[in-house]
Amino acid sequence: MLDPLSAVTDAFTSFLFGKVETTRLPVRTSTGQAQAVYLPTAAPGLGDSGVIIGREVYSGKGYIYDPFQLYGQQLPAPHWLVLGESGNGKSALEKTYVLRQLRFRDRQVVVLDAQGEDGVGEWNLIAQQLGITPIRLDPTAALNGGIRLNPLDPAITTTGQLALLRTIIEVATGRGLDERAGFALKVAHAYVNDTILDRQPVLTDIVEQLRHPEAESAESMNVDIDDVRAWGLDVALVLDRLVDGDLRGMFDGPTTAGIDLDAPLIVFDLSHIDRNSIAMPILMAIVGVWLEHTWIRPDRKKRIFLVEEAWHIINSPFVAQLFQRLLKFGRRLGLSFVAVVHHLSDVVDGAAAKEAAAILKMASTRTIYAQKADEARATGRVLGLPRWAVEIIPTLTPGIAVWDVNGNVQVVKHLITDAERPLVYTDRAMTEDGAFAREASAEAAAAERAAAARNADYADAPYGSPAAPPSESTVA
Image 1 (tube, one colour):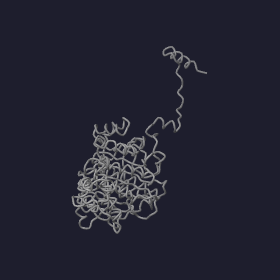
Image 2 (cartoon, rainbow, N blue to C red):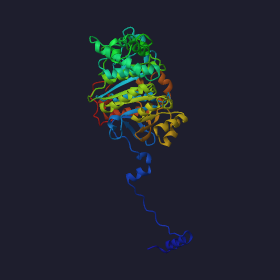
Image 3 (tube, helix red, strand yellow):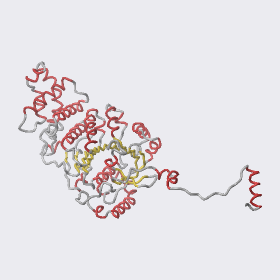
Image 4 (cartoon, rainbow, N blue to C red):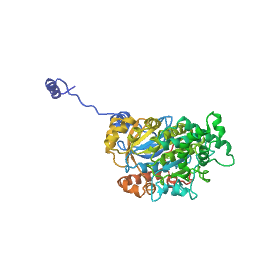
């Protein structure tokens, strides 16, 4: 029972406020209720299987990502698009991601390195650390016994060879191959493959046959031999660039023997090619098709194909069509394609908008570093990012990015360990990303110590060493 004073107090309160005050009960809650109240800590993660990228900015949780582990459960495709202005940490992310993936024995990586300084590609230092010699495609060096890749390599199917020849011509001319020119090319290619049996056919053979077609080829289609020669003349002039022009030496001979396609890391150094010239998309098309037929095999390895300056692929309808096939087959053969692009709007608004959209659709993972506000809005529209993510992109500092993994959107800070830093930051990267490196230093050191505590033997093993890696369910 209430004492008289309490009764009077309740009556007075009821008269003034129309209600009776009650004693407040102690607050009790469950973990689930607490997570519902504090949403940043309740956001679902990507699991604990894969490699550490860094930590989520809002919750502080570790951010772990692996397309091979997520594929089929949280990812419809294992492909990845990385976007952002220079100097915000894209290069550091790519390199640490590859180094951490290579800790697993069943991982293999190919990099098309289109950037570099002092005569070498940006990945040269990492290749040296792993004891690997980059495959340097250089027209000058090729003339003196350098690396050659043959578009007519017998390892490539005849259908693949013809598709590649058509793409080279279409990229160089900027238009599709008409029926008559396509017929002349098909006839020349068939004749070369049928008659040259004692060696690898080369582009010089195709050019020669286009200039001097066989009479039987014309007769089979009931056309005049002079017509066939005229139809193939423009095609011969384009291919002649690979034989006697500015790209001479890289593709006009048998494939160089001894290219190690079983190494954990394969680096194609394209830094000696003008990245703004028509040679770059041609080069990427040839390398991509050559790899499709010589590198990707139905074994148990998980493969990563990382392309710097990937707008040369996405922005060309002809090269994009070749890579679309590669990406489709890649899902069945354990291939994750990583495309690194600076500005998405320049790609989707160009001549290859349809092809670009198809490739972007296959990339279920998108990582966006800082961009200007108008570029961020354009990127958000194309990728379907939530409004809050679009608004935060222009405010991101170096090393922090918006990650969209099939609709799971987080803001993630990339962390770099002390062991990785000397390999990740080149002289230029130190200039561009110096603030990022300093900012990440303390956290990176802590992450390295934690990794060593979990698995001392594994954490101390050098990159590329045969030391036994952790199991698939262990964080690398």
